[in-house]
Length: 175
Image (cartoon, rainbow, N blue to C red; front, top):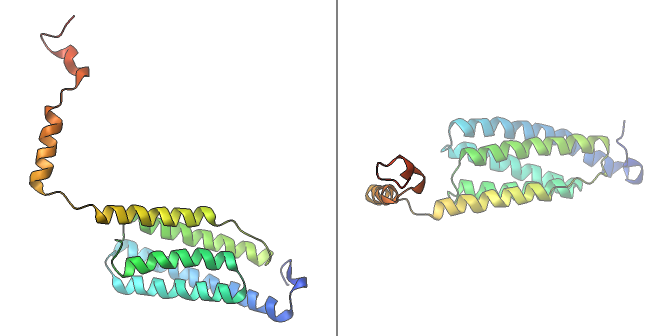
């Protein structure tokens, strides 16, 4: 059975798309397993490298099959993965969650494309979320950690600031 939309394509194009959709499922399953491995060992460079290779293969194959939406989303994920593998960004629970959710979204997109290889799937909200996560992580990485003395000083300053709401409990509070 050929998916809807395939009548306008050549047999070769249709077969290329269907082959990609089958391979995509395997690539996404590999990514999901690797994301879970990363969740338990966020410093494992071998896992990051494996995820990058899977994402790169997915992106290239999606582009070759003519699925531009999938290719663009995978490109942004690949860019995030490059920063993670190069140590420019740290692997955080938020990043792993984003990667898992993005993988789920790619699976949904692949499932929709199996039914209609010509459908367009909105991806901008996912691209925006990936870019915001990158910017947030870069901001966290660029903020120098406080020394213990600075942290103690900040706490002492905060403690010295009077909290007007608690004056009602003071013995000499105005009635």
